[in-house]
Length: 301
Ligand code: G1P
Image 1: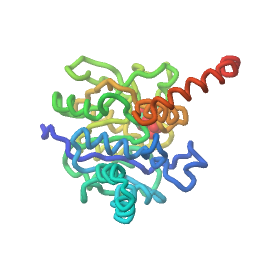
Image 2: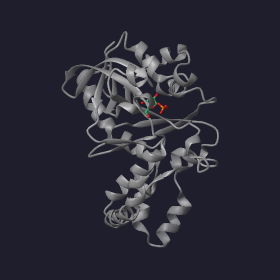
Image 3: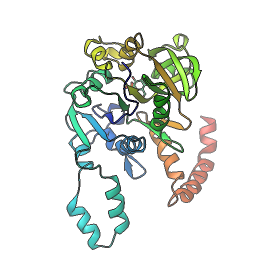
Image 4: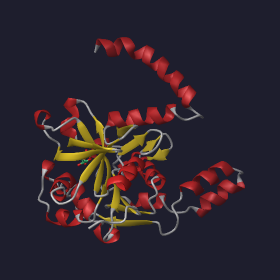
């Protein structure tokens, strides 16, 4: 069935435990860790809005209430900022606040994997195509990755995924796609496999956490058996859906930082800090100084 090529809704799963960032995530969700001065989850919401998304469904879990608070209004804070003349902060907070009724929250009750988290959003999405943004993966470039996926979706319909090249020794950390015929904004996907061994990967193009999916994915997710890591894997259900519907991939022209890893999280902080007009110059100078003072020790290690 050919559907409307407008995508109105997005899912942002924020239910994961954040074990890799303990103890920082003992009492705080990993999605609230900051890249410069914004929480990780804010970047995903901003990217969704930039791509024209009107409604975002967050799939949360226990101990994530602060994410809901982050996307609510703060009248007491605003009036105190107004009283102290901090108009720029008032403006910034106003711009970041989602319009009333444009975000929903539902809970994943057990940590059964990404596929299960997406399935938890099925009633709130309904029978229409939707975007999916994994907030650990932060787009850095002239525009967010989801906007590129939307261009490709308008061109070809069906299902669309974001990909980027990675080093051969990293393929086992991600979902990997096989590359088929080129289209204007991307290529046809011939295969998808979740966390393959280096020798079994169909390419070095990894799923970078951005998707446009048709609602038929939910039927596959409902029946999906556990896969890699003993979790219900989205990639396995996408592979099943690809037997009856087309999948295309858009190669992101920017860079995605994997903030689920400490290295990626630090890289993202440095990249966004260097790009900031207020602190970029000072951060650059500090980095140069630090690099020269650590160079000998790091080279020797
Ligand atoms: C998930 C997806 C994987 C994708 C990755 C991007 O894996 O299953 O296909 O490449 O996100 O971050 P996870 O990070 O949940 O292990």
